[in-house]
Length: 349
Image 1 (cartoon, rainbow, N blue to C red):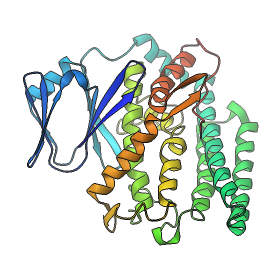
Image 2 (image 1 turned 60 degrees about the vertical axis):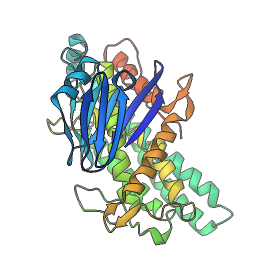
Image 3 (image 1 turned 90 degrees about the horizontal axis):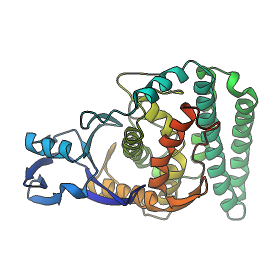
């Protein structure tokens, strides 16, 4: 169990992350009681905004649910590599007008513009991260720096193609080009990640079970990132299931997947790559082939939330990254409602 205090838009927003099997969430008075075996902790419900829990082996009492609903505490359940559900109070569904415009935008140039901005920005973030790694190796490892330059050149070509195409393209074209750029990006990272890690390319849990600690760590932290994005979208009044790049699905919140794209490199990839290239700091993250250790997950959560607390300047606001995550859905809503002419995805690397 990890309790995190994050600087949000208003004061400190506290998260409780219940990672691992067998947690029970109960209630006593105005306190939430969290127990697991001999471990037990009491937390005032007024100090919590969101509980993120692994659905495997997790149980909760009806009284605890009632207390959480009464105090606007969200519960987000995770399974594998994605959020699978959330609990929130009735009536906290956001503006009907906003949701109508969110639907309409899927059929006009607003939707194409959003998809285009998401893809061009993600490719730019990938490029900027690779350029940092190349610059750091120009003297220490010129051969690797030269090979990284080749990948940077290929990704730059893809980015220019998408930029030149503009919003006249369709979603499939954007998805295709994003996949092409990502293929080069993940191949390039094999030059950066030490050989002993065993990384030989991107492995997603749903497609081919990863066995190396780097892919396992990516999948785990992307799941945590998705839960944070989902929480921010809910607070903005947008519908997490109405997206513009990823295909709508009742099983997957497409807008969550859309907004995740702008934060993958800055919030997950960069600190994680730094961890895996820093001597032996990554050892012990995996307890067996294909499985993260409990201590490893705690280490990754600490890494993630330290990054979330880092202050960055974006759109003339110098605030923690967690604050930018909460602002981005509001900025997107302004564009959808035509209160703004542009939408700028997060691009601070």
